[in-house]
Image (cartoon, rainbow, N blue to C red; front, side):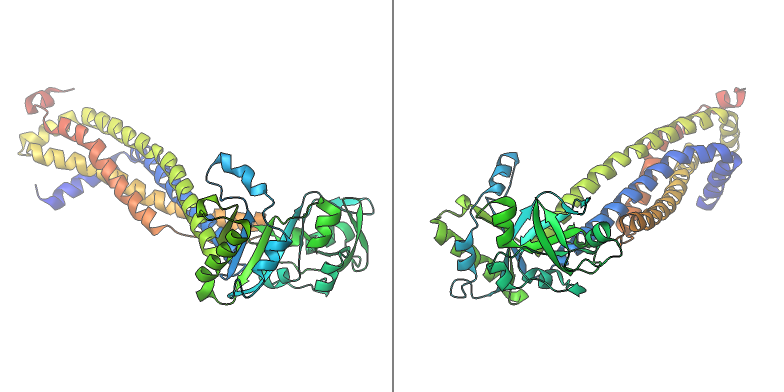
Length: 412
């Protein structure tokens, strides 16, 4: 039998019982589609987070108190008080960190904001006017508070567009007083709709001078974070080293492993996100791939049934000259053909489901969720499907190939 004849015979064997062939392929279709969907969503999530992180600029360097968390026992250290006015002054001194362009302390304020009985749980924090430059968002109504307001500990606030909508509706918010932790703040600016930037929603923020937040809202003398910006992207590594050296000298630290602070650049954050999302995606994809194993077992069972049903046919083929090798090749081709076809359909289904998921997530979350077709995963899924057909089809094919032709002809 020629290779072409073997292929035609295998395809006709698949086409004879369309329903059984479809049900046989179902496990492979679901498995491959699930893997494609999970990897596509994982890649989309990774790209979204990385884009959000890079939204604050590649020159941004964040300094946080406490040593960098490397396990559960390190989480307490991130609430330390190692960043204060002294550290801020030293870092903004060009003699210490010549590559630093500017910096702003950040103080996080838990709680919500209220206006005439209406409340909204916003992201409240204290900072300086530099925040507008870092996030490239400037008030569309009013103005931002000045450095003088920060020095005077003024009770002024700039609010996001959603905060304005929730508290004031269509009314003018400028000049109105909102309440944060029973303290009145005058609204001096309203930010335009911006959405997600650097992992939080600009539309939900309330920004006050950091000095005001320290004195009136949280009662602390330290900062939760200092966000800095290098003059150019090229000198970011040098600036990071200068910042670290300056803080170590201030704190009398000679061993870097004893640092009571840690630094993050946008490149570091993007790399961490890539690693974390990659691990999660691989884990979820491996769980989804279990259905491929189930599909392979289903193929083996169906092929064994097919061998039993076609025992007389196998005997006839051997009687007219078909060799064991011909029979083996025919049934292997049938098994591989089923899995390749199922894998192809699964790739198409998974790609379409991922596209629908990106549209739904974009509408629900109000963000630009990028649709990513994972070509490598599609090729891998196609190859795995073929391998499953080969592995799980081998035993039924061997059983068919080594049937005794006389006994096969007698089979009823």
